[in-house]
Image (cartoon, rainbow, N blue to C red; front, side):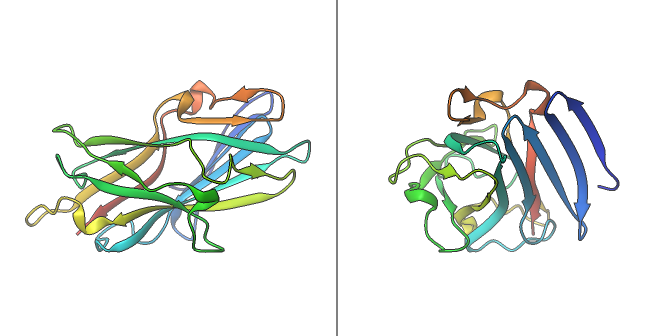
Length: 193
């Protein structure tokens, strides 16, 4: 993805850009800015244990802290196995541990090769992003060797927020969602060999 595109309405801005050849999206909506990108290879990716597929940065504005209440990720593509459970977890890249005690969540697709993972019960309370700071997390597939492996083909995987309610956060007074113009937000795209 080359160049940059912007949509501005009040305090909401979207940038699409490339850094070191990797597409990133930066979404600012009220007091929260999100930046996300695919981690590692985007083509001919190797299936493995502890496959960190995306990095997501949450930045709280200088006007106040932000509480992340719920995250809902949709996994789609040929790599998503049919009727086979795989697990996903949110990782703090600094500690290597589950982010704020987030549980491991299972994802199992039907024939449409689409499944959803929701994180809304954090064992250490809802994560808080302190005003003016950024918190990075990794979206990890616990074992991508469980993904479908087609013969002589690359198997695509797309991870996205598909609905405004796929991210629920609180600005200290009000629960907020993604702006409808921002969805679907595709922040991780790759293909496995």
